[in-house]
Length: 123
Image 1 (tube, rainbow, N blue to C red):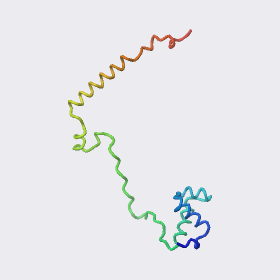
Image 2: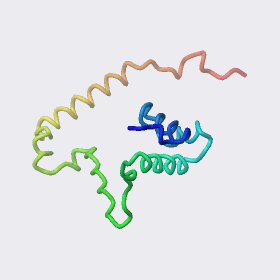
Image 3: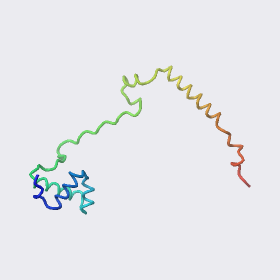
């Protein structure tokens, strides 16, 4: 690649973009221009070096499909997968009982702060 064909600005932009991996906005900030100006500068540099134009999405082509969001809840999974992940009803009931007992025990262990003298208002 014969970089002597490029102007100083084009050489500088190519170096920042392809050697350092900077994004166009960062290059634009460094060079004191706009992001579009850097894009056009790189486009001209590509053409001057004999490379094809930079790739961009052609407006007449459909947009790429967005990736589907991964299910967050068991209810959002397909039924056959969810049924394998969900514990049986008896086990779910036992988990609920265990959880209620634990919460009840924690509530009993908490100190009663209502009779605390530090919390009483002073008149």
